[in-house]
Length: 458
Image (cartoon, rainbow, N blue to C red; front, side):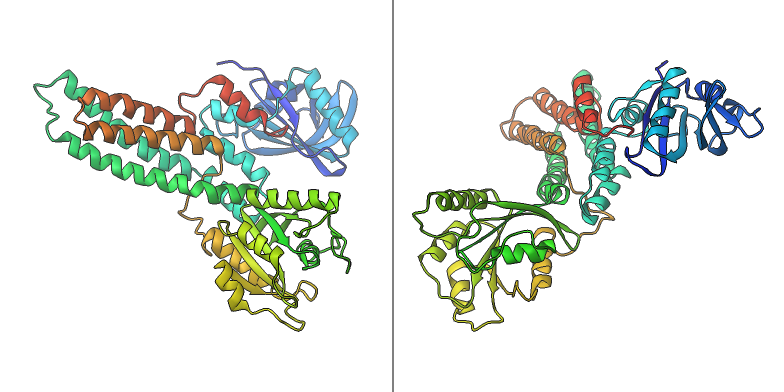
């Protein structure tokens, strides 16, 4: 199939050591033959070997634009399985744009966002889950997310989905064959065997579905809300986590009146931290709004950090906070533990049932224990990226959930003693849903939507 040739700047548009212009398509090499000159002036890149690098100049007729290195990757052994050329030029914005304009002038068109990866998918080099992993690698916020995305790019989601689909289609094919040729293929006692296969596949799919929550946290970060009474040390904690004086800290209660959001790295974990107004009964209208927003933030949080001033006794405001976090994943920071402590940790433990970590936000004491606790809670303390799969994509999660429902309907049909052709309907539906994860049987609009979210040049 003949396709047009696309080109784009593949590096960020700012002054740097080098910039890269990427070209893909059948006219990539003919275009380069017109605009590239070697030092000797007689080398045609279309006649050179694949996967070679060449030093020379980009020219527009008699005008030299820049001194460059050109990488040749002939299809199908390239990212897109088409002829691909990458021009490494000096990293100035003006010269980079000038080279791209020259490439476009001689026959290419500007690539759409994600179009290089889209071509890799359409040409069969990668499946849809791997294509989505490319985007996740670019946008990875931490080491955990990066490693998980790299594993998806290597095909761990693809391989697992293929394994389950092969099992489903094997059962479906057997049923269809038996229905077409009942004299030679018997379905007697097959429902019991089918039930066993479905249980195995459901177990695998439910493991994937459960992983999607950790996968979301890996990809997006943990939505973390800091709660506490006024002057408990919430803003001081935020400043310690951020590593700078992001929040105003004073001795005046109620200094923080609105939510303050920061994305931070706590070791290899990304926290999307929200510092909130101190929760207390107040007649101040502005402070009331802040308290209301704090409570709403806590409801939507993945994690609540309840900061308790260990130098003061509990009161009705603490009881309100304790009630807010009773059904939430939460940890209690026993703050100002370097001062005279009047609270009993056992009392708070009895009231909340939550983990308690003694800290001093002012002295930066105990923050390492908080990091360890969060890691253990959300990632069980040890992720093996060699064999574990974490679903990080909402589209994939929904397809897995729907395929589970279809397989459970097969089990229900077996339990109800329904005819075997009823099994086929739901088995085929599950097979098609799983195919959607890896890019089989997906419509063009979905493909376009997915790749539209990519950056230019990728």
